[in-house]
Length: 225
Ligand code: NI
Ligand code: MN
Image (tube, rainbow, N blue to C red):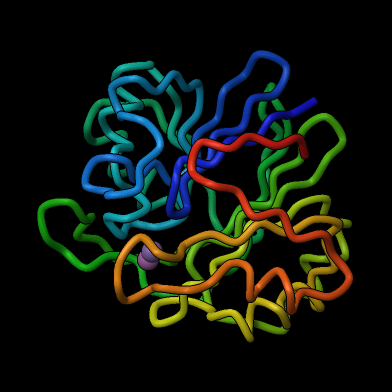
């Protein structure tokens, strides 16, 4: 069974049949981080976009583990320029890796903001639809609500990871609508309470979600897909 662990903000690890993935590894500088970047063991690092609270410790983790970075072309090229292994992808494309399939989905958001911890690059942010062991996991990345979530949901999603923190992404009301569009079996809120600007009550989200089981993961919690 594929095991998903929450490390805070939008960072999760996924372990499947001996392969270890980490998504949006923002640990250093995250007041709620569930691990230290230097302790992470990963074979793949999946990155949705260049903002510091998602790209985070990608370079250090990929270097320490000789891991492959997977993400939008602009991020992959940047990482290759740093001497790292990376798999270039883009929105709408999927690729079958030894562990399973990754498809890049749209996300309505920005990409980079410059500064030391951010990529100074253009590009599009993305979400990930990940298929492992016959299960489908959707990590929305940072995004506002969009109708095409209905299209993404046609894949038959077992678990959706959705931002609820508002201000930079969907808030609770729109995330509740996202669940209606995506129709996942289970939904996990993310991207909230890390900073004052994204304070949200996951219990309120849980109470309002219809048609899916809402699993609130505390930092450090693990669950099966
Ligand atoms: Ni962002
Ligand atoms: Mn963010």
